[in-house]
Image (cartoon, one colour):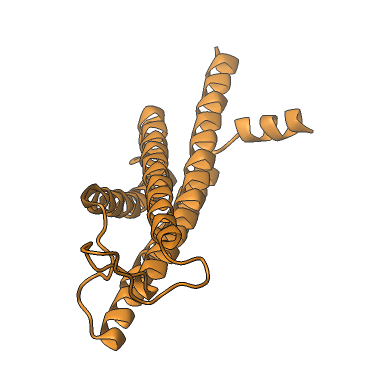
Length: 205
């Protein structure tokens, strides 16, 4: 069964490959755009109703930089989904069809970018979860106070904004996993298209 599946993919035509790039490009674009807008909506909703523009818990400075890098990678993968769509449309026209190396290179770039974003999101989730666990372990085990002070230490507390942050990271993680699967599939289809062309060239010789 696997051999039949592999052989069918090796006969990938430019029209079939173009449809895959266009469909998955649009799917990845709207999925990332939708999920990327949810954290902004949640944070806006929270700050409007809490009337607070500052975070309740002092975070680690480098986490903010990692978050900015993660958002930059997310923005890149959103734009790269549009690149998939353009490549698909070019494949539909034999006069403007890109080379096989260009198609495979685009799929590889999307794969590397989505993998990088996935790794950053997992790292941020681990850091944020460990940071929250630290604050909960400092609190009395009989309950979780709204505000906690220990001697002369800085006042710190855990609130809804921390859960909003974790939910946002989980949503981003889900989107990046899906985009990673899309990129792997497109890379496999592009490789199959290359193998199919090579077989056709050998048959004509």
